[in-house]
Length: 259
Image (cartoon, rainbow, N blue to C red; front, side, top):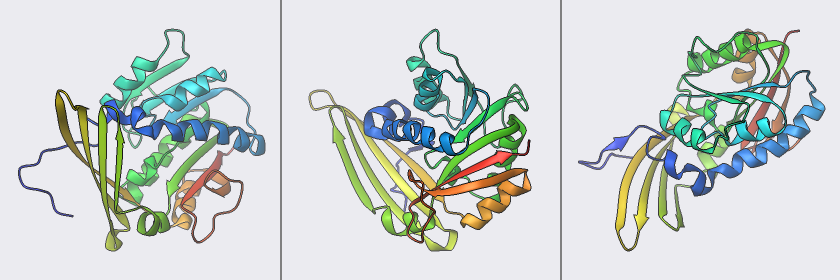
């Protein structure tokens, strides 16, 4: 996929942030919130302190706070966090922190969380195994003994075969065009996202972003988790309680810090 001449690309989620929830992406957090209750019934923990890494526009953090959790949400995108703050009620038990989950803000306390989450492909944005390992070290340091880590990743099968090459989403005030290309040599999918914000009367403003997701073999992910002291209790085929299969699109990992 070549870059068109004279086309300015913004960093991922910089312009997309304002359209993120309205474009339908909020549905993942709603679905995961329901699924999380099933996972916690199988993998119980004590305490109600949660860390949501790559929290985005804060939907999951707010849902957890509504369930009685005290939540810290961390994201590297100031634009996404700005959207989260708009949604944040004054009395919400949510703290939002701007930072890289590979090298988090020093203010993020150690051994202070009972649950850590990282969802919706966020780990697929890690370009190397070292980056992935750095994220897991952050989790291991942040979790209290016995704490639980729940995260998901798209599989190579999904990125290569099930992620369509072109998709168009259209709604009032926003049109989105997605063009993607799988690159076998790097097991990655390059997504060119084009958004048009506006209306038919006043016209539309265009923005373009590149998003890249990398796939990792499940055994590599499990090994990296084990190396930092996070014992994998289970892996699940996305949003089910079944074991992953060859054509699984998304795997959820449930790992616990030694108690």
